Image 1 (cartoon, one colour):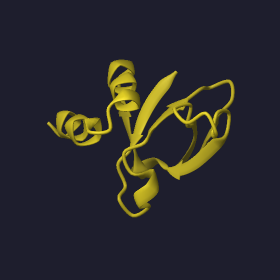
Image 2 (cartoon, one colour):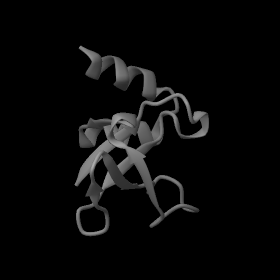
Image 3 (cartoon, rainbow, N blue to C red):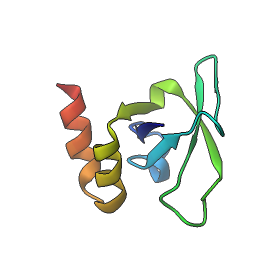
Image 4 (cartoon, rainbow, N blue to C red):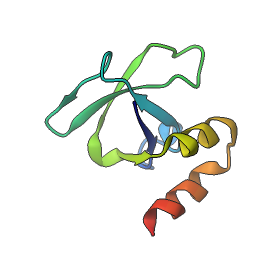
Length: 82
């Protein structure tokens, strides 16, 4: 599994959401990556396709933190910008 956070502010409702890449259910093509939003029960199993440039790969621990803390996005982005 790989974990991502959406860091693109152009789609405000998706900014800061945590996603996961499951190689058995998702795929990568060209500059796009298919990911899952398992944090929202309404979206469980639904795939999203984003340009790779919209997503920042993060650790599993940061993914878990992003799922439980609304304020985690900026902290995580700051951590990875260093």
